[in-house]
Image (tube, rainbow, N blue to C red; front, side):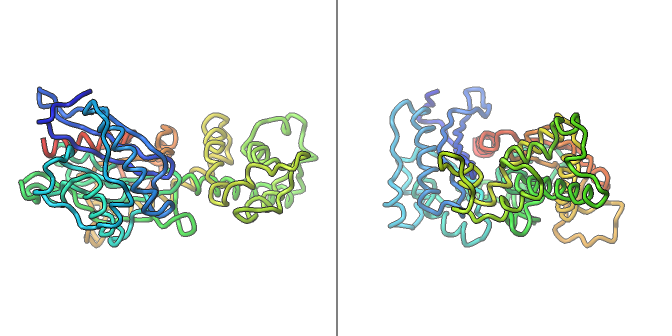
Length: 400
């Protein structure tokens, strides 16, 4: 759609490990927040890809969206030029800008120094000044709390739980009148996890894959202990599709004890056996982290379609760590001894779920079951399927 030049345009950019999505919003003639256009580009995880690829992916996605809105080709500043001049623009220098506000939520942005580094660069790239919440640069969890902007009282807090390739849990509070123009703003309170796959990532695709392998190996060790082996299994059992058979087939293996050669092989390995044509197996062409992550769809299929007990155990273990992190950010009326600090009251909090894994309803249900078992029942639970869209609409509602 082509928006009138007098309309305020707002962009929310979701920067992820697999793609970048930019959604532009505005207000309709009836005053309703609407999506004007969207653009996409390649991966933009800040830590994995570095600042140049990060900014280039944002530039491509926003240019695409703006061109659709304005009905003409739009060229944002070249990234190399942006990197040479790092000062943010001010309101006076924004006369030719098309964007009124921008909200950038990026995976891999965790430290305050990351934000301080990127704010002036993004200000110049998007021609949005660093004033009155008009340019927000934060971890991707930030845009997933956008439902908090429209939740009625008494909801005043949000806990965002993301489960994708990695995971993180973050709490937020809505405050009114804290910006220069008196509009509502959202502030981050605390976080749990988000430490990367070596230290955490509970509930993530990596964690689910790792737990699946651990469960298969435990089961294999138990069979050896009790004198059962795959060779002594019935032909019906060996033909049955299970989590074990799926994992072994995925890696081209015959027995669980061969999994070690795959899991511990270097990121780029020449030691992997090749087929007759000298081609290396697919698992040898990706890093070790991705070997675990690639198993998540198989684990979900085994757990939710095949009803495989081993896969279900792996996923329950996976979500239990994430549930414990959510609990750590909460205070319950039934537990008055808890030090309040920045903990949020469950009865005034919306739980916002995001990430590709929570796009599977059965996995969301597993988390909610685990939360209920530890006494956490949120009054509102929202799955944010399109974080960039929700964030963009939230900006339009915020600034008009």
